[in-house]
Image 1: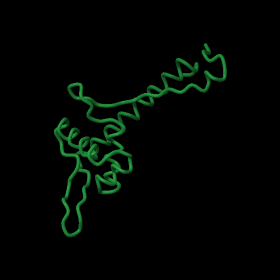
Image 2: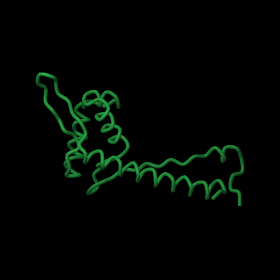
Image 3: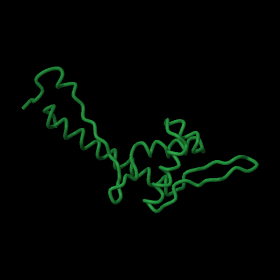
Length: 123
């Protein structure tokens, strides 16, 4: 049975949003993943915050909240000094991001297939 009746129906797409909560409080989602990836790229919380258009203070708040709620250290920080400060992701952070990526890919694949089966008559 074909459900699509016009061109507009054929152009429909499904969108979903995934995030992790602990005790009703958001812990991790796409935005926080983007922050951690930018930290990994630049080695700087300040530069990472600029990259994703949030304040340094907000970025720091996200990191602290994630670490407190997950009970793991995500970012190794080095304060100033001769060669300046910097930071890098911990191995726990990298592992957490990898697991989240896998989960998101699997969920999106399922949602896409189910949407196609129900609304596009495929599957």
